[in-house]
Image 1 (cartoon, helix red, strand yellow):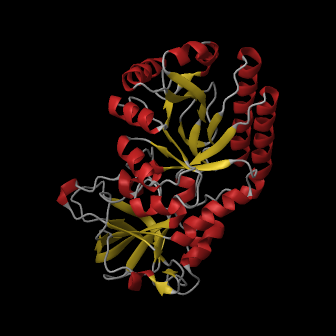
Image 2 (spheres, rainbow, N blue to C red):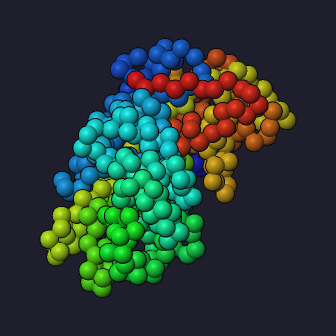
Image 3 (cartoon, one colour):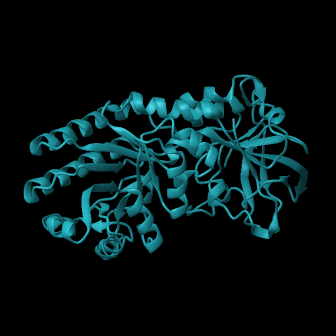
Length: 427
């Protein structure tokens, strides 16, 4: 980060607003980062810790619903954050859950309301996962023709049909996405050119124990390009309309992962949902028209994880030592990459970039110095920040890492070097 960076000289409040947009209000407006008027450093007994805000979760889901067609549901992808109290809270906000393992299916079953629909996705699912999904009526997003055959074998053993949605690997990727999940050769989904032949065989699949209920559409994640998201949604509908015309298949269930991203790094800005609303509206109308042609109402859901929970979480760590080494000032903290792997740049990043770090109790002070931040691990990979603008801090001061509600605690090697595990709180 250089002095020309937009966060250099900014106050914590300004960084908070730039990063979270409307969700910034969830974290208070006082001198200190706070919840319900209480500073986090007074509310949380110790660091390192992850804190998740119920109010922020409520607001994230409510703002998304405000810009969606009324008939379109929302699924929460548990893999983004499987903290059980958070998932239980989400059960009161969303219309269903997407799972990525047997443990997540069991958690979803435990918290889901009777009318909520569950699904499981991911390559190389186990026989135990197939069996549990079939027995519990959970939709299995099939990633290959081989998986369909394995599901059929388990279904015959159980004596029940398996509810299956074909996960599609499209001929395009979501432009500007942090992770491309479609286009080209992928371990995820069935290549789109192979889908029509499967749809033509749907009656044979029923005889084999497969109830082909729909399609799972996901081309990429973590995109901040609203125009690209809209284009991808339109391209999906082009495929669906072609398949209906050529095969007569209309899905009863449709799960669409739009790939909505969050702002993690300096210079990035949160997605404007109002600008995306027209694309969501067109998607809803085209899905409705698809169903009307065949007289089948399509149960359509958007599947999101990170977008719903990232801004609702902060990672809290405390400065233990301040030192200068050959002209570089270091803040050494009690938290690190073993709790928050993505912060260190070791979770999918090609080049490490700074995250929004805030001085918890000095939110109104501008950043007047640039420091490097490291954790307690004896490895140079344990990086919290490089040339990070902050107010002058000393041992005992608290730091908060924004956007830590998704792919943070559960995506990190807590057992590394046998350090203590960060405690998680939902407030």
